[in-house]
Every structure is written in structure tokens, then in C-alpha cells.
Figure 1: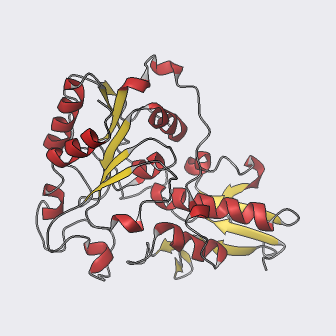
Figure 2: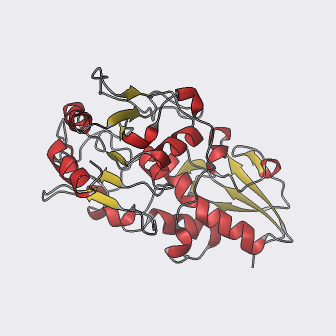
Length: 306
């Protein structure tokens, strides 16, 4: 049973964690709150990821909650504040959100990511139906595709008559402190550069119209998972089966390392989470160097989009 008044505290600034929590929150609202009250505590930057929540139900994640409300946390609070532990090593991201928000695990079918409502993207004056989205930014050093490999992928896409569309956000959102999204990729002089030039809903709309999406495990890929567009995604530190959500007939092709130390975050049971450096102390992690353009191009070819 749920309390008559419940706050779902989405105490995370990680886009992937939040998007993964959306189907659970939607299920809870539709199942338990037809006659009971609820609020959704969230950082204001992320409201548009939850199109099914009325605006008057949102409150700031850092607000002092009415004592009449029971509070359910997306991430486990530590020492009484919103510092959180990230996903346990061997658990799906959606299952982790289930435990925090509902205290039970839903079926994978029920955990399909919630699509964002399409938005007008005419301001770009571009037909995205003949393009491939390439995600160029990353937050964690060990979850990236090297810029020279991204350029090779873009060159191949362009040579096949499709337009590479470069996306991602650099810098920090208003609530981030040290977790800055960065990019080593430089615009190669062809394709459409939309880095730092889209909202969540605009990017999701663009992704839904393109032939394919290429990227690495991170926030923008989780946004891509809300669409039905084919995805080619690299996974370095975390096993793809713990990240890829149910997408119906939509295709997701994982690119994975072929090394002994792959999936360290999933398999090594290490008590660290920021991935500021490789646990083997490599300047460029070996798992990152395995994310070669050749593998991504082969996956794109298998989609028969050219």
C-alpha cells in the first residue's frame, strides 16, 4: 500500500537515471494515485523528461517536504542528504529505480522508456530523415569514443550520402558541480553541428526522425532509447544488458570491449563511481581504445540504412 500523500524524490542529476525512472513513476501514478495525492521532487532542468506529470505536481528536489508526505527516493540518501549511491553493479538501471520508487520490480515490458512529446524543430530548417545522429560528448572519461574514431564514422556516413548530425551538451547544467559534460571532438567541416543547441525534447524529436543514432553509454543514449530509431551504442564499463531497456521491435546494437578487464563497473565490485580515472591507471583506458570506427561502421551497415 502507498501513503495517501507521497513524494517521489528523483534525487539525481544523471539523465540516464532519470529517464530510466520515468516508466516506474508513470506506473505508480496511474496505479496508486487515482485517489491519493503525490508530488515529484526534481531539479527543474529535468521536468521535460516527465511529460505525463502535471506541472503543479512538481516540487524542487531540495525543498523541505511537508511532513504529511511519505518520501520515496530514486537514489539512496546518504547521511541524510541527497548525496547518492549509483546503480548497484549487477542490477538493471530500471530495476534499481523500481526498488527506490515502488519497492518492487516491474516486468521489462512495463519498463519500456517513456517517449517525450515531439516538439517543433522547424527552427533548424533541416530534413533529418536523411541523417545519422552522432553523439560527441561524454561525462565520464571511461565512457567515450575517441574523437578520431568519431570523425571516421562521420566521414563514412557522409560518403554514403547521409548527413552526420553532431549532438551533445558541453559544460554543466545549473545543478551540476564537478560532473561536466565535455567533448574532444572538433567539427570536421561537414554535416550539421547541433552541440549545445538542443533541449531534451528537441533532441528526442530529432533522434526520432533520423535513420540511426551512434554514441556511447550515457545520458544522450538514454534519451535515444525513448525513440524507435535504431541505435549503435558502445559499452565500456557497464554490461549492455544492464543498460539497454525494452524497446519493442526497435533495434539496439551494442559495441563492447574484447578485453579481460571489460565491464569493470559491473563485474569488479569496486567501491568507486566517478570514473575520473581507469582502475588500471591507464591514461586512455583500453576499453575506450576498443571503441573503433570500424566496429560502429559494420553495425551501421548491418542496419541497411545506406
